[in-house]
Length: 342
Image (tube, rainbow, N blue to C red):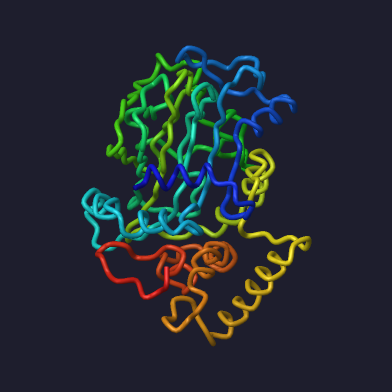
C-alpha cells in the first residue's frame, strides 16, 4: 500500500503543482556552483568529494507534506498503525499527527544526507515527539539506510544544516553547528540499520542521524518519515517564523512546488488564491471556523491550515489551542471518526 503510494507520488507527471517537491540533485549542483561542499559517497564510504553531476546515475528527490494533497498518504498518516506505536512509546493518551517528508534515492544517486537533528526544523518544544522512518524497499548502508549516533537524543539542539552540505541554515550564530561527524565517523558510536519493507525505525527529534548516498547499481531506497507529537508539545512562534531558515531552505533546495504561494499566470492559481483569502476571512470572523462539519472546503482547509498556524499561533500554545492547529495537526490516537471530509 505505502510503496505504491510513494511510487505514484514520485512518478507522477500531471503538471499540477501540489506539495513541496525538491530535486536534491539539481539543488546540490547549483550549491556546488556557488562554492558549497557537497557530501557524496563512493563505494559506501563517506566523503566530501568534488561534485560533478555527471558522476551521478540516479536522482535524490524529496517531497514534504504529501498527505496534504495525496489521499492515500493522508489515510496512512491519520489511520495507519504508526500513531498507536508512538502512543505506546510516549505513554501518552493523546497523539496528534504532525507531518510527513518522503525521500527517494535512486541507484547511483550518491549524494548523502548530512548528519542532523530534526528538532531544529520543527517549530515546537517538548519531549513527547516521535519521528517514524518507514522504508518500503530493502535498504543497506550501501543503498543509503539510516545511521544514528547512539546517545545523541540527550545532546543539546544544534543549528539546522542544508542536508546535502553542512552549511548552516539559521541566522542565529549563538547556536552551534554539529561536529563534523561525516569526516570522523570512527570517533562516534553510529548504528546503521539494514531494513526490510514493514520495518519502522522510531527516533526522538534531537537524535542525530544521516545516511550515505545510494552507491548501489540496482537498489532503490524509497521511504517516508512520518511525525507524531504528544501532550507536552508547545508551539514556538519565533522559531516557526524565523525568516532566515525558511528562505534559506527555499533558496538552497530550489523548491519546485510550494503549496502556500500562488502565481498570477494561471487561472487555477487565481482561483486557489481567492479561496485562500476568502477562507481566511470566514475564519477570522468565526462565521465558518475550521473543522466545522458543515464546511465544504475541508480538503482545502487541511492543505492550508499549517500555513495559518505559522501566521497565527503564539509561543506556548498547545496544538489543540486554535481551529487552524486542530485541523493541521489532527488527533489520531485514541482513534475516532474524523468529522472532516478528508
